Length: 383
Image (cartoon, rainbow, N blue to C red; front, side, top):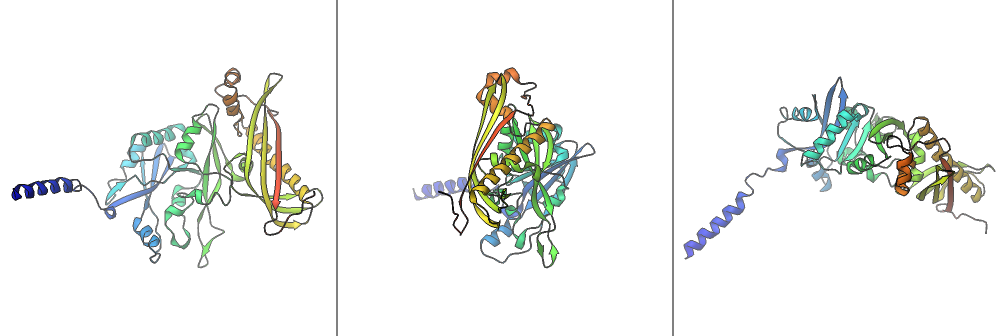
């Protein structure tokens, strides 16, 4: 009886242990951290940035920081899959794609031929996730992937792999994940912005040597699944007032009575209202935002600064709309708001799934700014 029990225990152990026979140690795998895609001479170029878990583990355990090296693989093919498979022959260990955190497109690869192939592969391969942070660039992808980190921090803490860490402190162009981008890109009369990255070598230095650092430089604009244009950050500054997720942003104002200050404004409350006038669709934007004075350059009444801020915010919003109107881009997604509220009217008026706009379609922009305090100093308001 004891012998039978022993045999049963051994059989049970052998069954349980057999499930681990094909397991691989993490140090024997190569983890792809970010993917980049370019399109050169009718060929798709793939870049793969490699992640070192050993560096992360040592730093998070309180060990001494080592210099973080950036390893990037590059391959070319006539299709996305062919290019990806050309990475395997030179890899010295098995590649794993389940830890990819970001995807980067050169603007040349944002045409439908390349972009649709990339999305198709992500749809089909089980290791890819839809939570990838998504970016575009006009610079060589190799330069973006080789940008340096401060204090040799791991690559996963860069603006490419961890953009949401910086956004609450300085909210201008909101980062976007792949599933969000694809959802908004597919909406009727939808407009979506793909943030752009560049490298800057004039701000940060180490031992008197300038360090290339990643920087948000603007965004590429998609309308009805088509990439329309890529604009610099300065041309898109008005979008921050229309985003409910804007947490904190800086604005410089100068009032008519020569008061001048820098303001921090926070968490705008936005309402976009479509309506009809004489059968034509018009749009009204209401924005309420609060904040505080972070620096006074020249003293002036607080009420005057609030009015000056409201006037500047309106100008920034209208500037985005007017710039888009000249390029036939619905930058404020006015057509989509009409589609949401009056779908039958949108169907009647739309041409090629896009609502025709005029220079007067944006009828009213109503801005209310309330300064609550002056930072550490008190703000005196008229009673």
